[in-house]
Length: 609
Image (cartoon, rainbow, N blue to C red; front, side, top):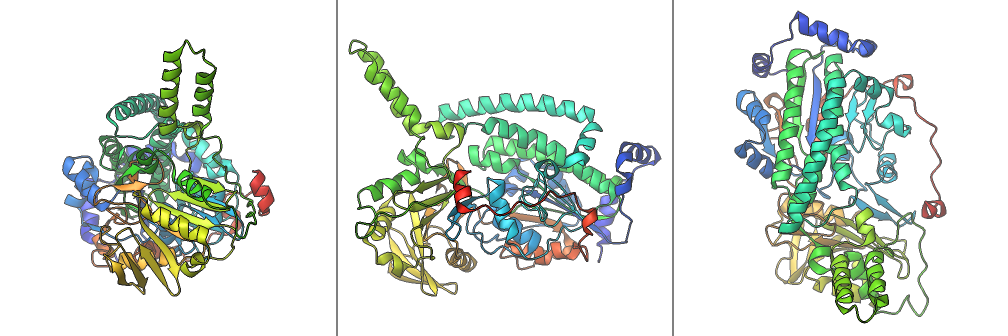
C-alpha cells in the first residue's frame, strides 16, 4: 500500500518512538498477551474510530469551540483531510455499519422494523434483532483477523468485545471480551479506580443535568435506567475499549474498528449541540489523544488512522410530549373509530416477542383510583391527585419509566408500528405481502388511517410503494418518485422542507421499496431546524431533514478521500476499508471459542419470550 511520507514525518515529530525504558514497560505490562503479537508483514494497518452520530456540521462547530483539541491538531499539523459524506437511508447505525464493514446493507429499513414473514418485531436495541441482521449478510467482513470493539456488527473480527452480533454464535461472556478483557482489566488497577471515581461523577452529573433540563423544558423525561446506561457507556465502555485498542496497537493487529457511542446517547437525550453532548465529546477526544500517542510511539506496525461518524443527528422534539400521546396511541385511537376487520371478520392477532403497551397507563390509573376512594371532604386532595394523574399521563406512564415505548403491536387491529427516532414504519400485519398504494386503496379502514395520519401536524411525510416507484405525500402536496426523479403531481413538492437533493431522493426511494419496510413509511414533521421524533428524544436520526444524513470523515490524504464519491455507507467500505482487508479469514481454531448455535425460534416461542 502506498504510504504518505509527509504524514509519517509529521506523525513521528508529534509522537516520537518509545525509548528503551518505555518499550520495556510495555513488554512487561503486556507480557500475558505476548503470544498474540502479530508478525510484521510490511503492510500498514488501519485503525478506524467511529464517533457515533456526530454530524459534519456539529464537528466543525465543536472544533471552533475548542471541544476537540486532539482532532483539531491532527487536521492542523498532519496530512489529513476532513470532509462531509452522505450515509444513505436509513440514517441509523445498523444500516451504516453494515455498509462500512461488509459493503452490504440491504434489508435494513430502520433501526426497528417488522418482519411480516416471521411475524416478529426486529429491534436493534435487542441482541436478537442485531443477530437477525447479521445472519442475513452474505458478504465477508472486512475485519477478519482484526478487532471489533463496541460495535453492533463484528465484521468477521477475530477479537471482539462489547460487540452485539457475531459471525459465530458466542456466549455473552465472550461477546463482552471474555478472559482476554478480564486479564486486561487486572493489568490496569489505577484505571479501574479512575472508572469508579468517574462513574460516581457521571451519576451526579446526570442527576443535575436531568433536573435542570426538566426545569427548563429542554429534555423529555428520565428514561428509567438511562442514568446507569450512561455510566456504562460514557465511563466503563469508553475506558475499556481504549485499553483494548492500546493493547491491539502494541500487538500490531492489522485492522481495528471501534465505536465511541457516548455522543449519540447524550445527543438523543440533551440535543446534538447541547453542552452535555459537546462536553462528553471532549472526553472522547482525550481518549483519542491517548490512542494516537500509542500509534506514534509503541505500535507494532505503521497505522493509518481514520476517524469518522456513521451518520449525523438533527435537533428534535418528542412526538409524545408535543401531542400528549405516543404514535402507537394515535394509530389505535384512529382505528378504534372503524369496524374491526374486513367484512365483519376480526383480524387475527400476530405472534411476536413485542411487548404490548397496555401497562403504560398503570401509574395514572392508580392515582385516579386513589382520587376516587378519597372521602368527598378531601376535595383538595382529590384535585391534587387528579392533577398529578394528568401530569404523569402526559409525561411518563409506568412503562416509560422502566422501558420507554419503542413500538406498538395492536393485535386487535393487526397493525404494527415501529419507531426509529424520526422515522416510523407502519405495517398491516393481516396481509403478509409488502403492500402498495393500490392495495391500501382497496380497504376503507386503511384509507381512513392514511388520511388521518396525513392530517396530523406531527407527521411531515408519508411514503408508500407505487408500482415501480414511490408515492410521497404531505399536507401541502404529493409527488411520485421514480429512479431518483421527482414528479410533483399536486400542490407543492412534499420534500421541499427537507431540502432533498438527487442522492437523498434516490436513497429515500430505495428505503421505501425495501420488501421488509413499512406499508406506510412516516417521517416526522420538520421546520428547517427541529424534526419530530417518534421516540422520546431531543436529538434524532433515521430519516431525512437537517444534518442526520451528513456525517464526517477524517482520513490520511494518501487515501484520496477528498474527491471520492461517498453517497452511501457502502462507499466507505469500497474506498477505505477494503484496502486493508486480510486476504483470507483466520482458521476457526484461532477464533474465540463459540457456543453451540441455538435453532431459530418459532413465532410461538418468540411470542412467549
